[in-house]
Length: 174
Image 1 (cartoon, helix red, strand yellow):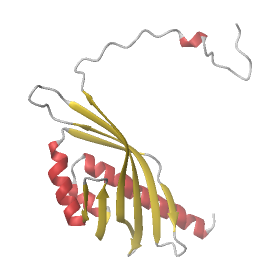
Image 2 (image 1 turned 135 degrees about the horizontal axis):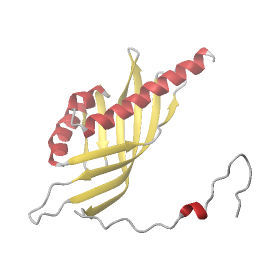
Image 3 (image 1 turned 180 degrees about the vertical axis):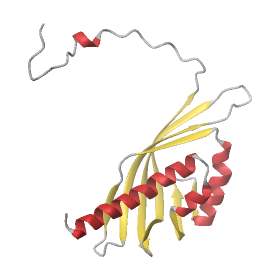
């Protein structure tokens, strides 16, 4: 493998780890780790809800996220493109996020599931890749009441007769 290709693979891996570290840090309310994902002069925009510098972002997250009972950020594989010098990159990642809101005065719990695109500008400074700008773009959202006792699973047909497995290239017997 050529040296340039190896450098690209290593940079992609480092950037991907930052993206995943952010998801884990948000879900575990580890705001020091959230901060580590960004350069000190970073700008962050969360849809229409928030836009600010890194300190404002950490303050906003540490105020809003603990109000939820839980969150789960499931990030897909990032699409990463580097500039010609190799010290900056754009990164686009699709996510499915969920949040569980606390019970309201009627005992109702709301679950939110949403699809989001994260559009990030990364820079490598001192050999470390971090986010310089993040834009969170909501795509869709679903809010639904939590059902305490979901219905039992439906009865399944015997799928082995509909889709038999093939072994050693031989067609299945009827």
